[in-house]
Length: 410
Image 1: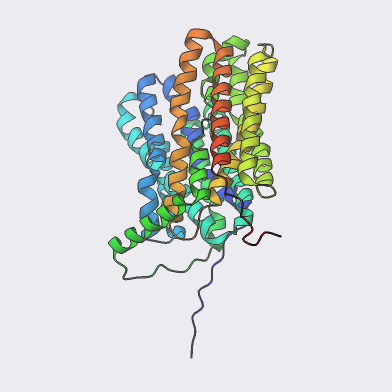
Image 2: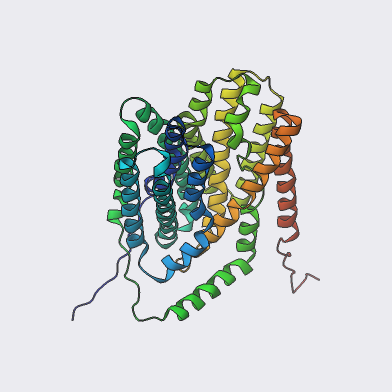
């Protein structure tokens, strides 16, 4: 009698830096390298902003992507499909002239790039939930942030450098494609059982919905969702570094260096340290601690001398602190994921974490316009500390009641 044994084989935590890297590389390349070259070619800022917005839109639509992954092909199949779509989009950008007349095509390619990288990231999260034990989830979260944040620095810094030194956007785009193809190689060793055939979609979606409700009804799941929406360690002010750098007397070169490649590299040790802590101590406590220190970093930058040296130093320090906090909240959320519905649940946490970012960015931007950059930093730090205090209060109030001894000593 022949027996078929389904084997499952995943990858070690460091490999997730590569598997998650595609989004970071493409984000840095599109927003910094391609955006700069389009501006130099005379394309309007509004058109460039629209292109970037189309790339970012699928990140807020992951709730639509997750269920499709959960009820159809394996996550390995989805990852490879997304990778090849990413390569096709980058190749299309490489051969498209950078002129205003090409913006409709470039915008469509940017949307494809955004969808493809969102799918690959969601599939990677589901892979982690299906193959890696809970004891490794902090390390995975740390390497995830290292890949994404480091990738942004490489995609923006190296992409712009290549574009400016003879290779052009086409050379930079092809380099991104080559790195992404190399980064996908760990997926080759993954072994997953095939999905059960013959199940109706309605049945699968109903089971998926029940699984999600069961997770969110638990204290652990509900607190993870709440913490992911807490407005702390959002890097909202970091989105405005280039706009406010003059208040520190920072040059364009210093801004490009600290917010590009060097900033991405600085975030890596923070992310790995945050993930390391999250596997050794209570994960919610690690997130609270890392987030509080991140808010303190903003306070220090606000109160320190406004000089170029302090600007460069604190931008890098805050990048490192943000990486640690993001790894910690990733570990809190990853801890809740099981093998069923992982893509959808991961997408739910990801979408929730992104909700406060544009709101707080608009708030601190308005504060900066009216009261200056120092108060902008104080405002973000204050919002974070208040949000963190409220979250801690909810955690304390929802703590399990102590068990009573049914047979007290007499």
